[in-house]
Amino acid sequence: MINQVRTLRLARGLSQDSLGKFLGVSRQTVNAIEMGRYDPSLPLAFKIARFFAMPIEDVFDDSESEA
Image 1: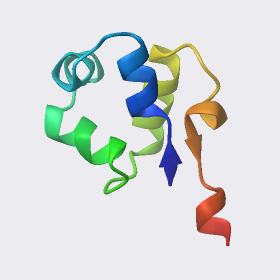
Image 2: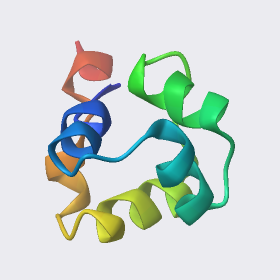
Image 3: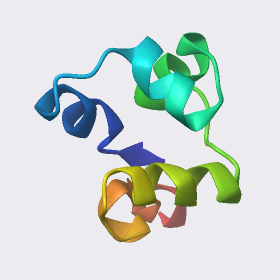
């Protein structure tokens, strides 16, 4: 799944650690999500979208998995 987490996080000047603390996950989890190695659970994906005040579809794009 393609996501905009890294771009959004950097635009706000946040570290992976600080975002992880807000979300209740480790820095490693944030890194894995950003690198596309881990797809977050639905509740975590919604939490990320709420944090950035964006619709979930604008943060995560699963069109790659439909191909």
